[in-house]
Length: 299
Image 1 (cartoon, one colour):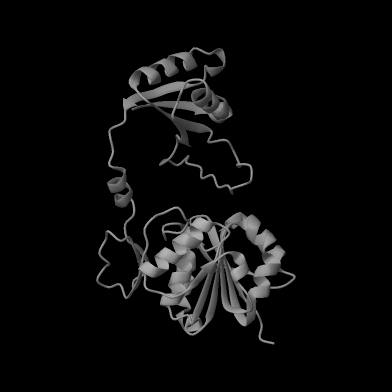
Image 2: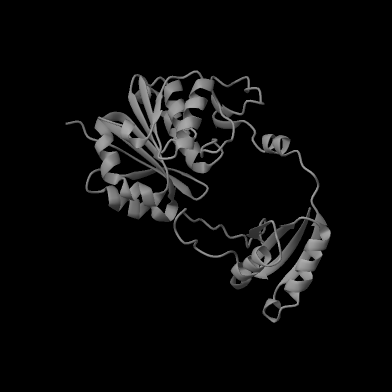
């Protein structure tokens, strides 16, 4: 296989990507910030189901993958010959080496330190000697390997509130891989319910719980019932706003609600969505994301 690397302005990204995939037989197309690693690098954040904040970056680098060199060369020639593509520049045309994708994937997932004593460790790594609590978790179809800022913040909160979790009933709403539910169980929760609308997430949670030798219940959202001393939801801002009445209802008197998947700029809208029921506050920040939490008063 060969890849064609192009540099182009944001306004042309969609048109060039469509031509490459629909007419020039590109197997895949990806876009990256051409200024990455410089002072001009610009992060872009978006949410699934919503329009992206921008099609790309002011200076974008588009990489198109082709079956062979002839296909890549022909695509470059045809594309660059178009009058409307005068601002597109060919950066590189290079072979893509055969790759052991399993080994490559494994090399990209190292143990993740949550606290000096609490780690997320893939199955192909040995836990660090200082690790007291370890979650064995491999990347899979479900979100939540511990590498994303939102997951790290939730896990840090769990580690910092072990005394609250011990003996408590915990709900992980939108469980993904089940990492938060497993962490709660490892920190002494008496009962843990993990729910998700995605059957793959429910299955991943069950398998990961078994691999970590913890007991929890995993199922669809209807599984959650009654009040919980801790409700965790690491989803995204839009569904968190929609779920505000339901999640607040699940927090028992004196219990805590911890929400993640929220960008810093979304703090006020989340606080407003929950204000009629509970007062959310920002309690952690990491890489442009925030963790918001609150406690229901005792009756």
